Length: 322
Length: 318
Image (tube, rainbow over all chains, first blue to last red; front, side, top):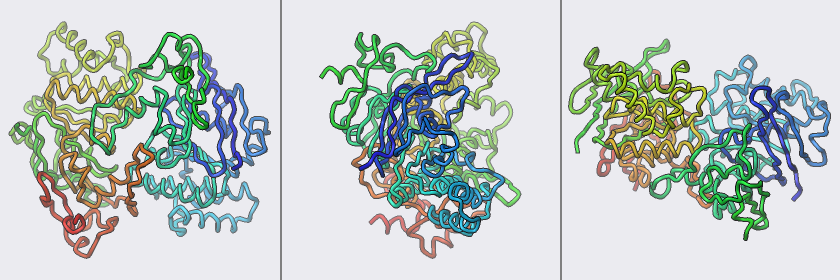
């Protein structure tokens, strides 16, 4: 399989006058093969969305700045690309679905026009052709084509998110970045949308980065998982690696925080404390202040990701010793 | 054990331009002292309205509410004020439910001042105790909500609800706005408090794994109606109503080996305004037949302490 995306040592900081430098993303590396889905999992403020914005080159500057690293997309280096070419990549080759379908759509434009607009801008086709394709996109995400002329407020949350997905997939991108695509939706609607995304992905052969805090959604959607903590990947591997042989204490804590619908209720065992402020990260391992397995060395220096199997990487001193 | 809270045929309708909105329609249940009743359902099913109506934050349209054996449906004025010392609420959003211009201590002090039984010094000690109970460091006593993260803010909301030593608390999605690890900390806190103080909770949530974890009994609501009620474990093992079955199967499970068949519901919630006769769930139900369109199903007892409102509950569960 060919690699679609290769991110290496991506580092993004937000530099502000009063709050200092916020180190949102620190040396993040991963790659993605064609048709593969990677889950980026972490809590609020872990830097998941900033990683996505970095790939899209949409980090707001100022205060955001891509400090270093490289992002290779197919044969191109995205970070060296001119803004003009980048605009051709966005929406056409790499698309993004944002978390909140209520704010991602333009309220004063019909949904059909919003889908057709992407096609017109990116593919230089006639208005009639773009409209025709927009109708077929609507139908593909399960909305009647006759609703082409309706406005966003006439749709429910689940349907709005389908429209956002239709816009993102209108030009059949090679890579889709979905930022918490179902967090704002009810469970039965979430199940519908996830099911639809899986079908579309398989049909179009799209690679996907799925950003979420929900380990249940990841289990259902992703072949590969990266756990993000304080701007770093702390554990990465196949879904089997992460779910069946969980290694990093933070990942263990995440699983321990989840009440389960299967099995019987026992007391939850969450990680105590909170994620550090990214403007004031602790020395050494960033998880050490909360870690139940901390040893003195953890606070002295940073750790690399140790490779514990062909696919499984863990950033923890206890995995490096073996 | 004795029943602390009971509602009978409780209804709450809202008048809207396009007709009567049936937010809560004929709900019945009783909660034993020291237990938790989970109320689950999707947005718009009336679960928050239910909680607020019980507390008299909204006036009920019809039906009765009992607290400790007494009919409190019509309580008002001084009687209601007394009652509120025993009945409190924790709100969903820790960002909008705290006054941004009040410090932590002012927020927690306010109910004690309104009650008017304690002297200043007593109040100060009580606030310190409450902060310790919910796990807030005492150095935070003079901070404002904007200086704190969501988990800590929700702890302030809990401390405020506990200030008057209530017997009963409505928890309206208290952990939905929090990250999982913080959510787990707050859930553990709520369970500890229940154990120590013998609190009775109504726990309103859309998160099924949370509700199973915290509840003794669970009510499932759909468009204002109670469609099923059972013991928590029984509901998850043996759901009877087609909506409950679909809802449970839709929960993404954090286990990659879970190959449980999902029931995908077609369509979405219909409008609660002037609902049509017949079953509210009929448009999305895979078992729907003619009778479902014409006749409202009644809650039928199908097991011990297990009721469901479906014409075909027996047939589809054979």
